[in-house]
Length: 469
Ligand code: UDP
Image (cartoon, rainbow, N blue to C red):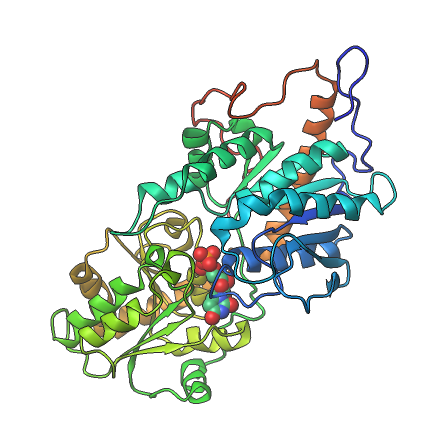
């Protein structure tokens, strides 16, 4: 960052002005591309989040360039996602065979690639850097300082939260990630949290300054995820080739211990055995593929299904594009989200938008995403018997389930990507203003884990830009 002889930072040279949307945002998504199909590997809710927000930012006149690591030699260096949104594939390390755990070793190469792109542009090309996940935050930290623009960061998940809520036998996130996250929290002008709970965690666990934390609820595409008319369920089952009379439970997402699909499978075993209601036509669909620590033992869930003698009950399906996924949600009687931790849980909102109640673990963002007792149920803990009781009770009570289905559509309707982007633009304007103020302040050493970290502060006041969905 440039400094004057007196040690003060120069005002930002960005074209963005307080209260005005930036012209161009460099958005960093190092470890996963917005072009990938979500629901397996490293692609999930964050990819959806980036695609949905970038497209809407562009529609409002803020161009977005998304930088992601090239994972195929076929990838074009630049691809237009939609008008106003470019995806830039940065070569950093081998295209294939590099796990997310190995990516910290490629951050220097990735940063060099980002810098090279910017160097070919006119000066002051980007007005703001928005980073997603801590790996991108590490790159954005340097880029934002070098370009003298504000850094906005969204965690998506936090190692300290995940480690506190690990599934039995799951491997914890490494110390290097925790340190890296702390550095990004300290460096960011604004931190975007999905919920007030996540904002509190940023403050309590990472020492974030509450004034820099903004709560921006994610959304759902209410044009794609719809109930599909009065015969929505029957039509969806027909299109998917499913039994029209089955009691259908659905799990959607990346298959890994954190997401606890095994809890649903064990609950299904209880139901089939007649404990928690007689469900002779119970079917469980699992839509998604292995991911994260689930890749260590990719066959584990299938083995559990075989061990519990549920081969005719539980069926696995490849990750589906969103139009097909909407049919899966419509087809289901209930969607289960038994995760151990979840910063939000887009699947829960998408399912409700399609008119399907959700039974979810009472953790993290799911407590916001599901209106307990209204649009679904929140279950404490992960005891399969308790899950069987919750799910079985709703399968048996058609009246209650129908009421929840109607309420689910209303609840999901409160979340939209348009309002996510409205608030994101407020956050950007705020970040520009903060950056301008910081630039005028006397010199302080850059914060980092070995220098002065902000002291933890009280939770009150979290949410400089907070909106209720
Ligand atoms: N998803 C999808 N196809 C699939 C499975 C999942 O498009 O077959 C999408 C789903 O629509 C949702 C996202 O992946 O938007 C998962 O997001 P969520 O927040 O539920 O979980 P995360 O992956 O962030 O842990």
